[in-house]
Length: 380
Image (cartoon, rainbow, N blue to C red):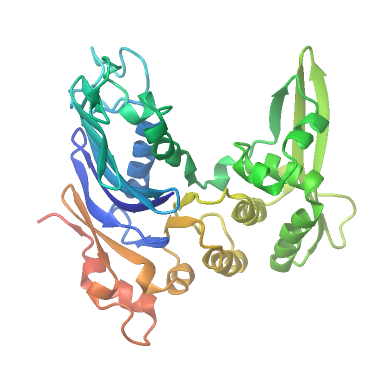
């Protein structure tokens, strides 16, 4: 999947994003509070809606590609009910007496209208369907229809990279032993496509593709030369009819006796290792979204990870935010989107249109001295 164009409106919170076009690599830059993270959150909301979640007062319009380049456009909108934002399937959410219904929804593929929805009436490929749930998107409700399946499944390929949440070191396998799981996920492609967290994927990789695990380990040791070895420790316990498999990361530092267990590894080192691992374990044709890429990374990690990100194969799309001068300077201005906000309206501009990157001067210096950046948030 590749996201080509996106616009979004939240009527409840009076926030809207004007159409933004994404390339294979997009870096959102702008002053704090301008709306960079909100753009990423809006994309997450649309992914949720595609999965069947419900939202109050939301409208969206996203153009994306599937199956080697087929262009799809999916747009729609919920009614706006007084109250707080709802996200869930309960009949009463956040004090609302009823659930917000979808007012309109369309899906077209290569210009052909596949879904057209107005209120409770849904037309699929020219034929009206029986009355379906009015609270959930049609591409979720009809996801098994052959003409819709690929477009619906595409949203499963949007990945929010957040190593701060990758701290789980256990995974419960029901009625499976470790050997069964390793056998089931016996190739790199299967491991990449799995829904496991990064540490579990690494443990599986260590079993079936140890040479690949060694490559990730050596990249990490180049950043932290005081480390001489890394391993994943796996243990297995049986509880009635379930098997609990525990994975822990351990490192061996030069001059220190014994291994440093996961609880004692510095957060910066741990996040760096997981970030490196993620870069090798993301499934192909995914959209990778990273908010504030530099968070928790030391100065000795940022350059290596930025270079690794920029040199990643072209079958992935990246949409990231950052404030860090090294990251911004080492990503060409042709990939920048400068974010601005006036009241509730967020817009984006290409760096070239703002005159950034036309000279040999430090691009980051040009950015922070640009009036459109300095006046990113306007209230008049």
